Length: 486
Ligand SMILES: Nc1ncnc2c1ncn2[C@@H]1O[C@H](COP(=O)(O)OP(=O)(O)O[C@H]2O[C@H](CO)[C@@H](O)[C@H](O)[C@H]2O)[C@@H](O)[C@H]1O
Image (cartoon, rainbow, N blue to C red; front, side):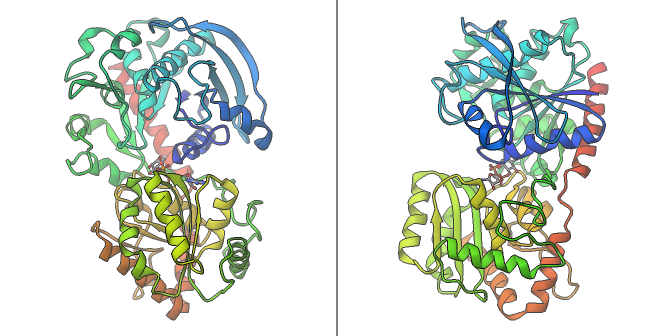
């Protein structure tokens, strides 16, 4: 089985959030399950910057390839590398004009950029004479890949055996633009229709991906259900219900080699489930690095996130003054909306001995936080899957979450009666419930040492590996092929 994955972010080449982690790990796991995987991604500026840091090389494959259908004179160059630790080939679509920005999700025109990239990825397959059994596209930037393949290339013999899987990593980002881009994309006018790309008078790339793929997946079973409701559906719930028979929720995993406290070179001291005392060495070193009082007995709560509404940060704002009545410490690492960056900087000012706010993107510090904290906070408004809680579990750092989406599928409330459970959480999106969950975690940490040890053991034993999910994707690919043949 030959699978082509298409996405904007792939770790270690370019990472903004969880999408990169998935594309850095899933292809390897699918490869281990017996498929041959090839990745297509843009040559973002940061890919060149990261090459020294992560020790990979790019080689030029082809120059100045024209793109079919798109109303542009721009061409692309094709570069190649390999996903570290695998046989997965990674092809980069290079174009100076569209991918000139410092950051991944910036550029002169985001709609044109996504259209160009989607069409160029298809063109690259042709140029390489690589016929894939499955094209697996990720998120709205690649939403037009299925649209092209099922319309303009529908009867093209080159793609006649190719099935299409589309994965939604976050329904909150849809790619909604003026209908004028239909012309730029070279797509037929009849697609500007309620059963096509039209969305409240505009065009919606994610909707295209959902409607024109053989199978649609999202990144957890709970989120797959939630997005079919008005509350979580972001106005696409009707479209998703329409596809409910072909919509699957497959939980993400994490890369067990990259994220292993026993071997992770980015943390201060390595440890495993049998040497948990060394985790507390990490805590002390982290407190020191962050200029927080070095105290083992105080609970240290971490948070690493894109600082956006999705992540439930307004709840934290509402409880902050009460939360810091407790003897606890809090470290946040993230960038995003100015109002939240400012909020955490203010909290640091107000509670200097309790709060450390790190407004930056820093993968090394992230690992130290996953390893050094006692608890990890994720009170998300919605969460398709969430990776932070999974890294935390693996590092014995107890998640405090809102039970929504993938958080509900991975974190189970600790029950002192049975000794089962790996974290704490709350359901209703309100500050009082978040406050209770934090208070409960702090109580167990401070007053119930035996239970706390049990929770940490349970957390570290939770299976959040990719293997199980990769097998599910393999089944989905087979299923998509069957549908394609019909
Ligand atoms: N400032 C910073 N410095 C260093 N590292 C940082 C950082 N800010 C964030 N990160 C890292 O970025 C990743 C975030 O991944 P998540 O899955 O938790 O959320 P995200 O919303 O980006 O992903 C979306 O896609 C993924 C993948 O499917 C879904 O799990 C998720 O629910 C969905 O919202 C983690 O690896 C985290 O450590």
